[in-house]
Length: 104
Image (cartoon, rainbow, N blue to C red; front, side, top):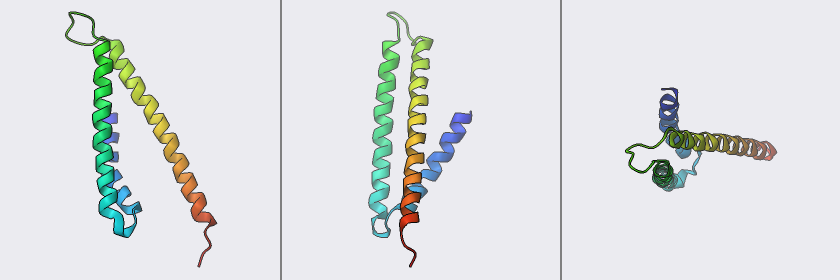
């Protein structure tokens, strides 16, 4: 439930952030790239997770073993940590760049 709530909040706020940070004349292009990236990422992620679950399904069974789901959620957790670190580094780099610009 917490994951669903957090994902719902980020999915609704992220497009506004992307558009807000884009140059004025490039809003449509930036928004389009965001949507394409989101769709491609979801498709590739779904395919990878389906492949992982398929490898964890025993012969003659209809459902994957619990270890398959644990592996998928482990990958999700690792990607979450990597994304958080990269996001924090990007914010810090942007703050440093803005602080170095002279005030006119």
